[in-house]
Length: 305
Image (cartoon, rainbow, N blue to C red):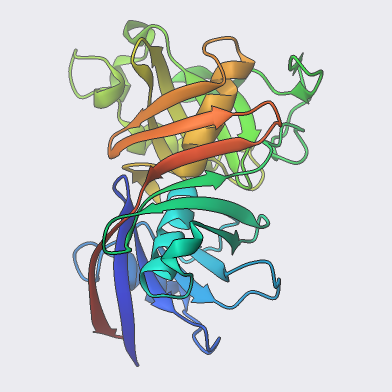
């Protein structure tokens, strides 16, 4: 079949968008992998089918598929791009400045800004409350700490690997995240770096991320983040479940921000510096996490499947 698509990205996290308001498009895992292939297909971190929502309060439903074809509950950068797709095509009037996106992890209210031509440029997404309960993240461990509000969570859980034990703080933002904060890169095993230059940018994330994504501690797999807190914000890299390393991850940035606050490394409002750009994350007094960042449409086209 001939598939009409648009390619969008949020801080380098890119997606193939397909209008499926007719609800007649079902993609196989192989078709999704082809579309996301950066050599033989279009190239993307995932595919979004834009479908009608059964919730009258929502503008549309975001059906998000990881690059391997697996279904994901939520994608933070993807939902900003989803808002841009709807606004720029007139499904949501630019003058409204807000919409609600339906996702598998629930409705996500979004406030957006537009340029002089009415095209969306920036969006702030209410990502909801972080989930800390170990069984709900999920992580195969007992809570070993409590937040300032008395909520039990898994803090710096040691998880064994071929390179030794690494400590993860576990948070769900509609999908599971395991966050490892690093204060001393020199203490990391040499085998995880291509040279003696040890820092976040040189870490072999494909190797270590692939191991932890599927380790038994995370029964539904997990997005794996390594992060360093600095004066200019929190620098992070992410290995996404079902995809591999991406230039940015919105839910991952939210999870890292929450984890940094829970462990006393930072406050509740930070700039999260990813390889593809910077996201502003605020964990508010209402316990909701708010993410602000751009969304860009790259091009439109058709492809044969």
